[in-house]
Amino acid sequence: MNFLAHIYLSGDNDFIKIGNFMADGIRGKHFEHFPPDVQKGIILHRAIDTYTDSHDVFRQSTKRLHEKYHHYAGVIVDIIYDHFLAKNWTQYSDEKLDSFIGNFYRSLHKNYDILTEKTQDLMPYMIKYNWLSSYQTVEGIHEILTQMDRRSKNTSKMQFASEDLKEFYTEFEQEFTIFFEDIKVHSKQKLLSL
Image 1 (cartoon, rainbow, N blue to C red):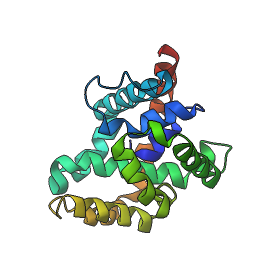
Image 2 (image 1 turned 30 degrees about the horizontal axis):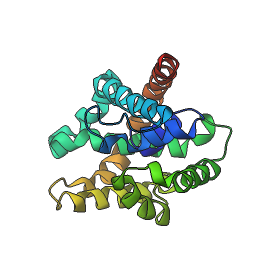
Image 3 (image 1 turned 135 degrees about the horizontal axis):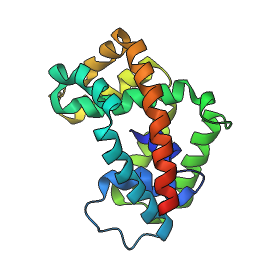
């Protein structure tokens, strides 16, 4: 799962959302200095990633891309799945997507001092280009994948994956819909156990 799904699956607690959002940049168990709910968000993020990587439907999606994109296939599917969450947002939340995103950006500003340096560096670009909102369109997904391809010095070829999204749009959307019901249940159970 990518940024939008991780934030959404965190529930209503801003600190859990922040921990879940910035968890990729935190290695090992070096997160005891964060507030307890941020720690829960980090643990939740890892549980979501582990569950996602082993889920049959997610693997079915990645298999479609593996020959072209190799180990980047999972990253691409994470982003594609965020597209379907954003596109179908009203099926998953009563809060408008723009409001959800705006509240999250405000929370990042309000809690700037507890963010990792990597998150502090990322935040201005994320907000300026409104990454979370751009997931709603295939064009927005293409931009995100192109930026990620640049970061890999154009070795990943991710910029071309928006063509795969268009070609297999129905299949990816069906897989996302099945998978997302499962990950919602798993995330709720994990949150209750933390």
